[in-house]
Image 1 (cartoon, helix red, strand yellow):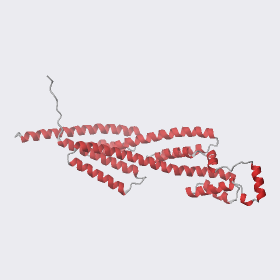
Image 2: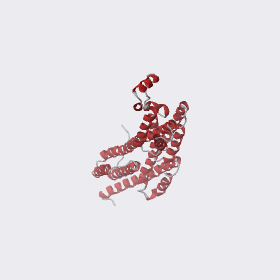
Image 3: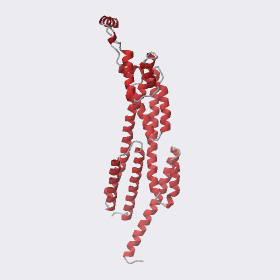
Image 4: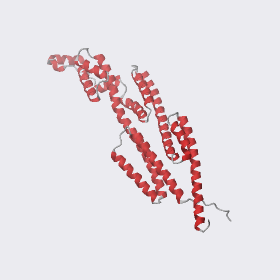
Length: 326
């Protein structure tokens, strides 16, 4: 014979309250998604689709489809977080490619400038390119013209006999391809893209100061002429960049958690003190924010428990009243 069993009764009011809490969490997730995507650009179409999904979730809740609703909200929140992360990653990679090409072209122009004769047409163009005054399209054009002027013999100005003599003196050597020469002079494009990708990801994660600091370190390392030393320093820089990115992602998750928690605490008059502490901590250190989140979660659990107890008490009293007890 088994012992007494404890049956936990969950009222509809509790289910509705839990659903509304999840809906607020979804709204907070949407606000974080919009904040994260502000610099990337969110189209009106994306916003309309997101609003439509939110309305569908609320209709599900109002129809008392609590189980289905809870699963749908969880999927929606996960989608918003993954979508923001994906957009940020794609944007950082696209911008990294352009910034890497600009940096590589600028450094290449500095090297070519040492090969050009002062006062020539290519000299003036290369000066502007080396100073970073040209956009990517103009920069590519200037580098192509400089390569042609500096690395290819002016065969058209030679007679047939002179061209034959030049060919014999060259001993069959081929004109060096610009891309081959470029790889020997500057950091490889793939490595530059990876480095700039980390730097831009830091910027998009709200760590502009740290990104600028590491960018300056990269420029300093890139100016080292010795390949072996430069590559070793770049390895060390990449480690620092990855660690900074990991820290930024961790802080982003903690801030998102704080935003969800704040949305819940704002419902309670008794939760205002914890909410104010949480809001102040978002401008402080990571440890301060973590402590505020932990304290806020504890306070919210207390307030939620009080709500649940009150809802159950009211349910019992309503039941007794319907049975004729006053």
